[in-house]
Image (cartoon, rainbow, N blue to C red; front, side):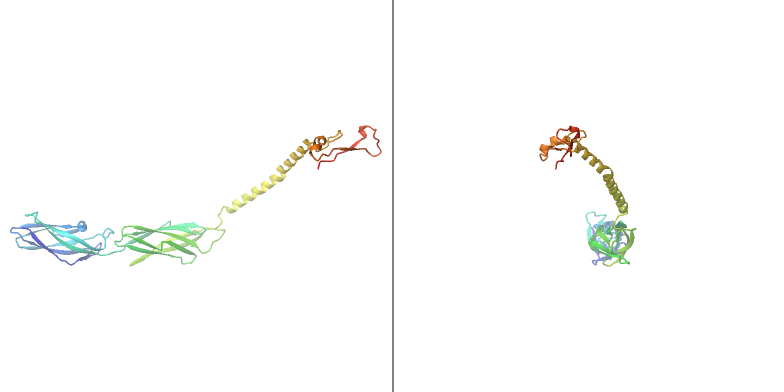
Length: 309
């Protein structure tokens, strides 16, 4: 008992998201009427069916079932040749199964998408962006990135310039937008630009972005400079009007405490005796006033004090 099955050996071509079919011819090689069921084996089993799913055949009779392939448009369905098998089971003799093999040629498709994060950047010397490229196709994608500025006011740095993205994954590139000229003060300048993401047999994907060029000096710089200048002027005035006079007065008081100033009604400065030995050894030298004799009273005597050097 059992069956024989014949499948067209030529590969069947199908595009993801499309449909294709192949005929499987079955012959009842047994001696009794038998019913045969069909099961598609392999990775395509979830999206390939036999129509009709069963055939009832008399002995030596033949029948045809159609294998219908409906691969989804997904990166999970790889492009290229895809082998598969069809199992034919006999109801009368379950152990007498037959497996016929075939090849399905899956077509390639590209389905890239891209996103610029953030869409708007800002800075005085340049703006930073990150480009994410998703490959939703079923073949590898070699995406090239090009920046376009219609006003020619900025230039672009792309790292890497070409992004290799396997099917079902994402690739990333760093984008740096730099101004051709800088300015010191003023309001930010807007520089709209566009990135073009392209690949082989892929229509370029345009992505719009914006770079806000800021001044070299931050807006708060002038206010900070005025405040700093005001603090400097206040410090100078504090020194001239308060600290310096106070220090001078303290120094004079210290000199008086050490006896460097004469005391009224005394015959010598208070510091003369104490400072004579320690400051140059000079001693006060009394001198008689003109016309006075040595015997006159001390009240008529004038004293000249030589200050220490």
